[in-house]
Length: 248
Ligand SMILES: Cc1cc2nc3c(=O)[nH]c(=O)nc-3n(C[C@H](O)[C@H](O)[C@H](O)COP(=O)(O)OP(=O)(O)OC[C@H]3O[C@@H](n4cnc5c(N)ncnc54)[C@H](O)[C@@H]3O)c2cc1C
Image 1 (cartoon, protein in one colour):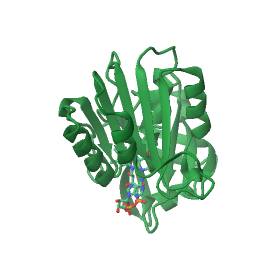
Image 2: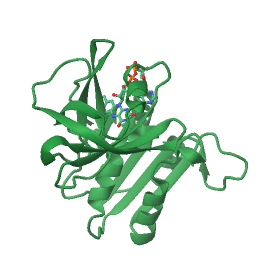
Image 3: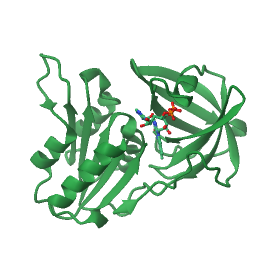
Image 4: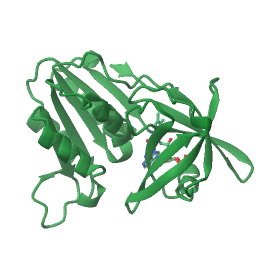
């Protein structure tokens, strides 16, 4: 198993600081926002899809450090996206939700080893819940910059239909790439929903039994990540076939 994040929350890591300005921001649902930043002075941001930044924020005179996965594939310029949800009673995420275009953030990075294996394995499986989709969006954008013969699955677990972040992008990817299988699954579906229901674990049993040459990339809160990794191992997949990023 690839223990992927280089843990920096709360502990400073030596790396050059960057200043970035918010260019665009919008709600993707009532608790989640998509942010588009540009690094000051046009400096190129050199990172690998799946990596994260470590943001330094001053709140009431107190220094806080929080990690956020980059949600876009490298543009080879100074732009990058983030996707984050507001944590009720959280310290930093509510502060970030008040940012407006033109506001600046300070961060270090990139960090992290939750990155794509190259070349891709014959079957690549991406499993996310909630904003765990952020680094996976970056990876999938990268994978589908060119036609991709490998079999690729995205199992995305959310509560409600409105929580299927970047749904249009993933549906387009599935239309354009026959090897890409997009499986959104709702834990609290409304009565008219005709798609998959239940947790991602249910879809793992349904779609991922008996695959050869698999590598799974799992991202989200630790309970889901632990459950999914245990389930995949119980299904016979080697722990070397698992990469994961835990948000808490
Ligand atoms: C490597 C890494 C990458 C991360 N990338 C992202 C990202 O792309 N998007 C993102 O929204 N968050 C991400 N996080 C989580 C983020 O760093 C913060 O923990 C989160 O924004 C809460 O900070 P806070 O100060 O508001 O809450 P705090 O005051 O620190 O409260 C922490 C509480 O928030 C919970 N929590 C942490 N993250 C989430 C979450 N995403 N959803 C719900 N509850 C959460 C924890 O379980 C804990 O109970 C990442 C964390 C790590 C370690």
